[in-house]
Image 1 (tube, rainbow, N blue to C red):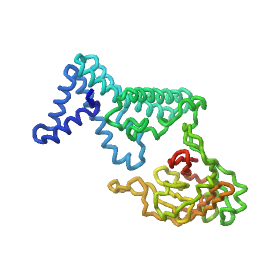
Image 2: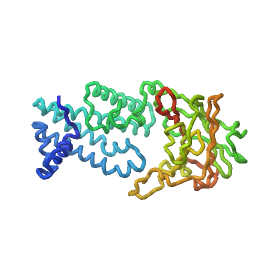
Image 3: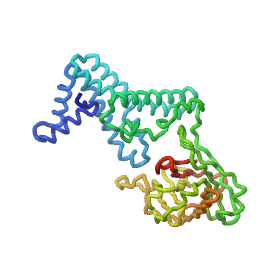
Image 4: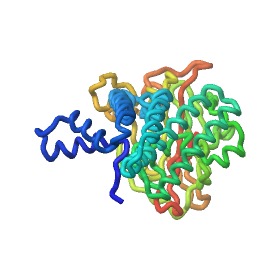
Length: 395
């Protein structure tokens, strides 16, 4: 059976025809021609369906400049374009077209549109149930999220089994189809385990830094009296952690100190120095995000490897010019005055490190008691079982 275009059908048809002869007909004339010829007796409801799809696509494009550069929030991006009201209206049009269809070719084309639309509809269901859960945080909204994720995964697996994956990969990524949404919670949840765990509190964790009278080193005795916070796996992940890792935080009048201790395979302790602002995540590394203003959109990004002179730093979200390609993202021109030290122990199979970050390089003074900072830390760990694919452990 020839491959059928679904939701993207009118645009693809107009694009290809204009490529053959850009002067024969206008894009709008080709669009009208496609809808009439492809859907015949179901033309009227499908014309309404595609008009709504185009409106949603325009909303998506118009918000791209801000949302994609500002916070990379793909779920928010999709939810703005495809509201429940829009999805329900498109569903009504598609149902009317399916009821009106008589010719086999029309039914087949509608089947393709239906498959793609259902993928989109399930994604929107998951996103809005997730937003509802973030708002209410109760058992009913939690179960709604899990049900929506399961329904989406079942529908997607059915399409893959029937080899009916959508032409447009934006809404699909299971088993390698497109970039999709599956790297984001709750799409990446192991729902069976999540049901066993019960309602998950998605509130952010908090901890207190300990004050030190003097400057600290990696092996300073003061660290023995500071509680270690263990890194964990991403929420909903079923992957076992391969490198138990923890961190501690202290400060004095001049510096913030973050000490990280973790397991490290003795046979994988050879690291090369790659200088400043290299792609540090390609090897074992620690990543620290600090926001003295407790603002998720503006923070300092610091990362380092188990090697001297192998680190990167940037100031995130400080560029306000929307026409700057770095708008809302990392400004790599910023070089902070901070340092780190490492200790690899082959006998114990450990990697210990400490970052020393002066308050002056963060453009702030020593925080007063009760001050709240935004903070996140994670480790990128490579282990043999993944053939070089990293695993992230997060705070």
